[in-house]
Image 1: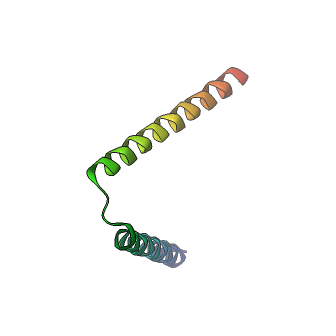
Image 2: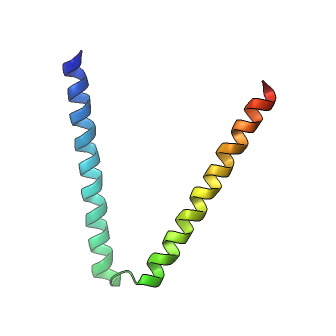
Image 3: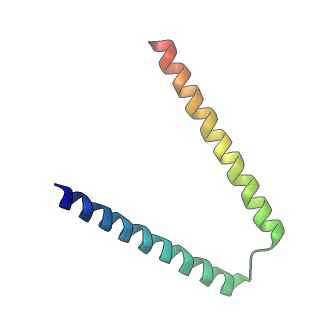
Length: 71
């Protein structure tokens, strides 16, 4: 059983590395095609991600409230 767990861990780590390598390759290609990301673009993307995280947190909190009210 432990051996199967180890192989599952190794397989997951391999998939993670493959996906990361593909994202890095895409990022490199995009920079070659369109130029490097500016600091303004990086800041705008970071702000948008923060807003998305906040929205997801609001939705999770809303879902928990609905579950509590139903109970």
